[in-house]
Image (tube, rainbow, N blue to C red):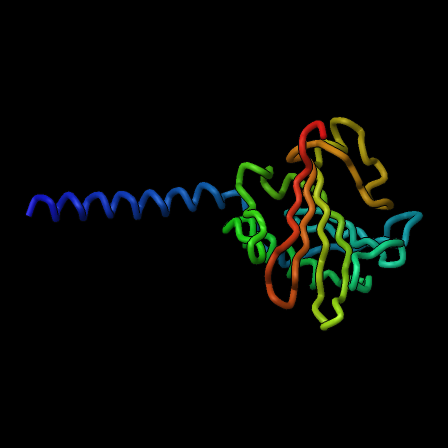
Length: 186
């Protein structure tokens, strides 16, 4: 009898502990915004998207001189970007990426609200819409004065650790893939 009670107590402890752990690792997630503003970027064909939770730029597809093989650059709508953000939230919360790709570990990223984003849209040969998201810490712009022209040009770096990441998001299949976070010092 005592062993059944002990087993039940341990099981409840583990169950509540897991629920608490899940809450702590997903606390940095952002709600999907209901409102946004979309404005042209001066001196660029790009569009700046601002919400209460993140700011990003929709990169004009004509600026993509070398799209990934088999993908056609397309313009993105704010609705597609918001859908991609919701999928990104779920991928970060669960750590899941497509197939056998590496998981997104919580310690690999800052809370998502701390990143500016750049978005490029693509269409696959089978008609799926893919959003490529390039994220970089806002502090790299404000503290270090790097990437001041991030609204006009693609941000590319060699290292920088969790200050920089990019990921592809399949809007049709609701999944993330090709997650890449920069290394530190090479």
